[in-house]
Image (cartoon, rainbow, N blue to C red):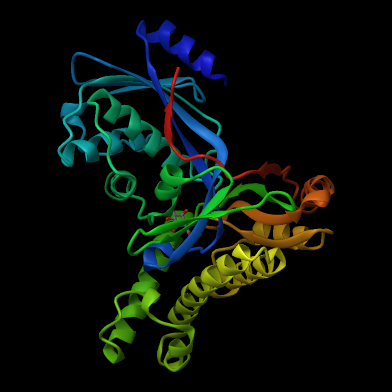
Length: 384
Ligand code: GLA
């Protein structure tokens, strides 16, 4: 949907002139299920955005219209304590968290359009939280520093929506930069923007078009298994606070003392943190092949040790790896469906997309969506 259309439809619906805010979805290149273990992630913002047009109301009512769903919803800021199990929860949750943090908001009229695919593991929810947070804050002329805003958006999702996610998605949606991926230390929230040279390769995102319902409960279960691992290891090493504090070498000496499943979960997270740092180091020296190998190892670890892949993701990865010019392929995001991320040599991208599309459909019966992506700019106002 064009910006002009969003604005003109806003005006026709609400008879007011809006400001416009946008926030992107993301794809994580490497560092999966490490964020809630105080570890490292390496995502980039996608060139797919959620746009929110906004104008204030004189009372405390919030009217929201979703152009994607062609559906409207209203709520009062005075009666906004609980989720309604509705798409508007991300917006209501954001308003709730902002008010709790001391930002008294007026009512608002919102018009929303998103081209981040929903339910595909590309963080459409973070894009909605962040864009609506900026929209609400504009009404009171407030700016919140990026890391703090990311924490508040995560809080909206954890405490209001009820999804116990880490900080990665909200953080990259805010801090993404064109032509860069972002190395984030999820403990300190220190980050580094690392240039992604697109003259030799492309990031190709392949959507399996499936989403297995297991997702949310399995996610929380994995978190608990990681915490169990930390608790057991703390008996021997009281100084550790999270899996981030354990090296693979150190872990080797204790893993036999952990329950088998807990040991596998911990091994994934600890090895994944090391893969992130090694692969980012390699990328800085333009060693794309090495980066791709680490992506492959990440997938294998997520499939075998963390057990958050699924047949469709494994098929997509297997097909991708067999294509000429594919340097690395892995599932991305929480797992149990959604997307894979692939590093593909520039000259081979077209053939890669055509072959993967055909072969995945032949094997699974699902027609995939494929997005050739460039790292894009994070959230902000679109000046009209
Ligand atoms: C989801 C969560 C993130 C992160 C990933 C797994 O996308 O929202 O916080 O934990 O899963 O890496």
